[in-house]
Image (tube, rainbow, N blue to C red):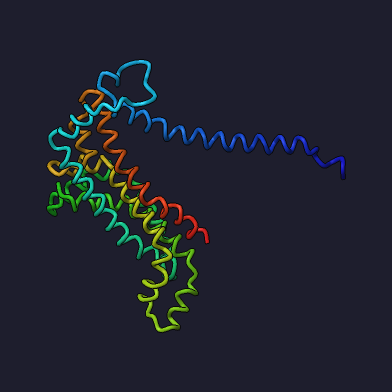
Length: 280
């Protein structure tokens, strides 16, 4: 039997090689994400003449000429405010509809439960450009075209599958015995949910809200098709700055990336806590 046992040295080398490949993959992934963002901010915070210069600076010169011109560009502030309103309303709608659906899936057995889960996922099976024309016609007939509410409804439908699946995993990770104990102490189902389940699931619900915010903030196609006067910042940049000089494009890109990064950083503890609840 000892002849069939592999030597210890090759096993150790294989483990070292596996660790090296693992950490190398993580390093490449981090560079893939951070390097474009870093160069975006370098160009946005540098003088316009430095944007097209070579070799590239590794550190910005902190010249605000491009950003100042961008913020003084007519319509930028209104588009930014529209993006904030649509994103916040999308968060409210997606969580307001997704959290009850996730709770029902995790706590109740009903006919067609598995089919309903498939339908939730199927909502992302159809590309948005395919639905753009029917949505535009329906919105025009119902008066929702070029409105904050209409665009938020579309974005909420894009974020709803994530909200349902995330909250479903969260509520499934919370033992039902905790609710049953609250019932025996005189709480109704609603009171047990508010006092016991909701505080435990709140980090994950906040994480789901972050996903909804980012989806709405970055979405451009529906915003460009369904709005004219009330465009979000992404649609406004697509319309107004697509033929602008390169420094203004970098300034607009930085203006889009920065709020999402700040928002995610502010709620990062909820993102990290979500996995602990979901994996219980």
